Amino acid sequence: MTQAAYSTIGDSILDMLGARAGEKFTLHERFLNPKMVQVLKTIGFDRHYARAEGAYLFDTEGRRYLDLLSGFGVFAIGRNHPVVKRALVDVINGDLADLVQMDVSPLAGMLAERLIANMPGQERVFFCNSGTEAVEAAIKLARQATRRAKLIYCDHAFHGLTMGALSLNGDNIFREGFGPLLSDAVRVPFNDLPALEKALQPGDAAAFIVEPIQGKGVNLAAPGYLSEAARLCKRAGTLFVVDEVQAGLGRTGKFLASHHDNVDPDLVLVAKALSGGFIPVGAVAGKKWIFDRTFDRMDRAVVHGSTFGKNNLAMAAGLATLQVLEDDRLVENAATRGESLIRRLRALVDKYELLADVRGRGMMIALELGPPKSLKLRAAWALVDKATKGLYCQMVVLPLFSRHRILSQVAGHDMYVIKLLPPLCLSQADEDWIVRAVDDVLADAHRFPSAVWDLAATFTGNALKRRAG
Image (cartoon, rainbow, N blue to C red; front, top):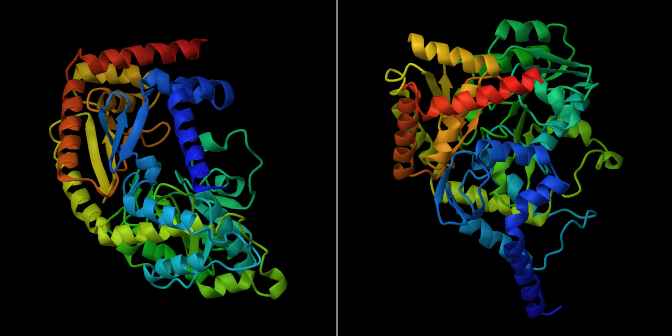
């Protein structure tokens, strides 16, 4: 096929997209997930985005939005970074042999080498396609290495939605209706060392898997928790597995969030940001002896794998992403900009009684709301809370989007936490934009009546009607 023919195919796809972009909600309602479309339309998030760059989305009318979800952490280096794009184009134009299967990939070896250089203590890497696949791989590696079945996880944990990972999910809404799940999974409270020690005591646990910062709620590990948990696991012969899928790769101001605690995990899980925002990729890094227990003979060289796990595009995207993190000093920016943003947002706690707490590390930040003290606001809060616990968070998220064009989310079900997960390339102007917007929306929320409370009344009425029906 000629180069001209390739160009025609590319132009054809863009032409098709341009012609039918206005149908995206109709197509999703008909062929994909109509409830998701209903959610977007109900909360006013049904926009048509035309392009994206760095920390920003642009709609078809040219309006710019600040993306504080970054694809749930996927776009840590920003959207459509030219270095990653160039790496992908180079691979495509190179017509490389890919996924030969009865061969090994040089790009995979190079990416594994770079990852291990950033994770002192780790020696081997397994590549897959996502964070949840990394969790599944860790479960299998841990069980094979220890010859044990039990897995320990934490309340409010989120490790993915495939069946093994779902068994380690601390939020019941994701589990309901999908059982039976793995029977040898034991839940303990996060940051509760005595509970962990008790669960480890029988000596039958293959692994304790934990997020250094929980994505659902942005709950930080208490000082000393991870290091003591690692010690308890080692004493019990249990693998200490750190899920860095969302918090890792620079988000907290260090390459791994667990590096703040100077722990040496047996297995480390990464994904999301490693993709550069283009090609799905996940990885498990760990100790040589653990991998050797699984891939222990030539006839067992393929006992666990992932067909697309080491594809050239994913490996190139990972290499380019690590280079961008280094060249653009994004880990350092996450540390300094994140610290500044958290400090400035925390200053609003004393100003607004509805803002109970601001916490986080680097570019992983929580705004926690709480019941007000003043009588009028307390009555309004109680009415909203009666309809749906945590609904008031939407009364902040929605005006942040509609009035200030800032995309954020509630951090989990039935909680009063709004999560900010900005790209690591956030600028001073972006920081000012966020603080100014949060200040404005909270100020409106403390005036009664106001646009925020009118919105709350509408959502509360709808929720109560649904409940009555």
